[in-house]
Image (cartoon, rainbow, N blue to C red):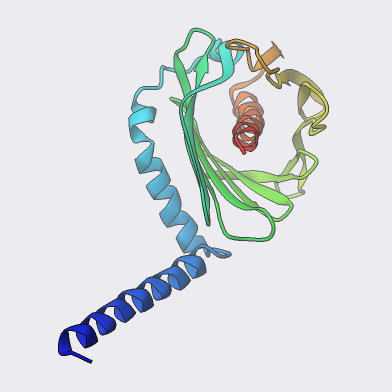
Amino acid sequence: MSPLIFFLAILIGGIFATGTLYFIYFVLIHFQPAKGKIRSDLKKMKNEITPFINELIPWNKEELELLSSNQIKQKISRGIITTAEGVFNSIYHEPLIAYSYKKYISSKKDEVIYARTSNHEFVYRTKKDSTELFIDNQKVGTINNQGLLYGGRKKRLLASINKNENELELPIFIGDKERGTLMKPESGSVNPRAFQFVGEMKKNEEAVFLSLAVLELVKDSINKKK
């Protein structure tokens, strides 16, 4: 074997080995990621959608009734892991909510979502059958598979959303009072409103109400693109 062929064989073998090691490393850090990895990813996710965040219009009480389930700038990448980002508009095509999504390597749900309005930050950490909800860096509680949000020291029911996939109207409750209805967009609908009805709410109630809706809107939009 000539020195050149021998050198090329070693080089190719090294590249293959390096690629294999990187693949193994990539899989390991994205399989059941620790809290440090999640914090690092959330920081990157926020930075990546900062241009979207900077374009969001100021949020006020009326924006809930004007929110559309339509998006702009949506981008989904599927591979070993799945990532997505996008911006939900108002019915007047104004950017209201920016988000970033990441699904890790797992046989069960293992996801993180970062979302922003002009005045609130939402983080959702999903593992298996439950989702930890953080609003403005404060843990609010845990959302289960049935859409029930429990929180506080006594783990009481704070809010809920109807999770029936066969329904187009998903009522959202704060405590035991219905505060609004999230509408699943029908095929062919043009710039549909996200909510059919929105009742009176305090500021903290509105943030919780919106957090349940955003989680449903993001996951529904990603699942539809499969």
